[in-house]
Image (tube, rainbow, N blue to C red):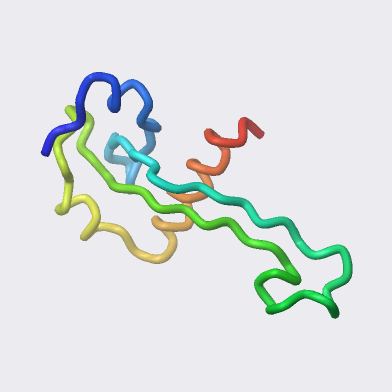
Length: 90
């Protein structure tokens, strides 16, 4: 299903291995590091983490499964860093 014009405006423009794309973010949550890591319920809570769920679309707003297949570990890291930068404005 294609993104609606409203969703396209809200989507984040990114590049996947040099190919322009859109990331439609469904869920974004930053959990800060615990003040005292020894009292944190898990190691993730001790150091903090970012949880992101997103779908990739081509620049016209169509689902891009072919683009997701191009993602390797480094490309995923770059896409997620770009999403974090755009969402948090840092």
